[in-house]
Amino acid sequence: MKIIGFVSSLVRPVRFLVVAFTCALLLLTNAFPALAIGTTKSAPTEATEQLNGIQSKTDEKATKPPLGREETQAETYKGLNEVQGDADIDKMKRPENSQNATTVEDQVENLLEKVTGKK
Image 1: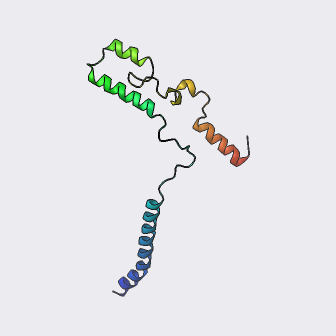
Image 2: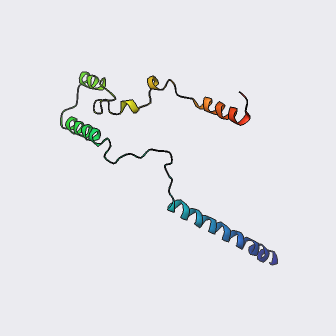
């Protein structure tokens, strides 16, 4: 019985530290949410005209009967799909505009070269 009392007296401060650490962690994660460091701030009204155009096209397409295959293909060839057209197509990552992109392997090699100093 003395062993149980001795062990519980040792566990009590550890339990207090675990509870205190958990409370502090919860407080900090709720008080300071993740920061979007390194991103550019956008204006709240930016691109709303484009979205409004897409929304009006969507509403228009929803009131009409479904398009046939030829009509759908003709609309799709103009851009991303029959509703969005070419909205933000220049911002999309595609094989055509990603030829100069660095792969993960290249990035790791560059990092290892910096760390080891060898090329």
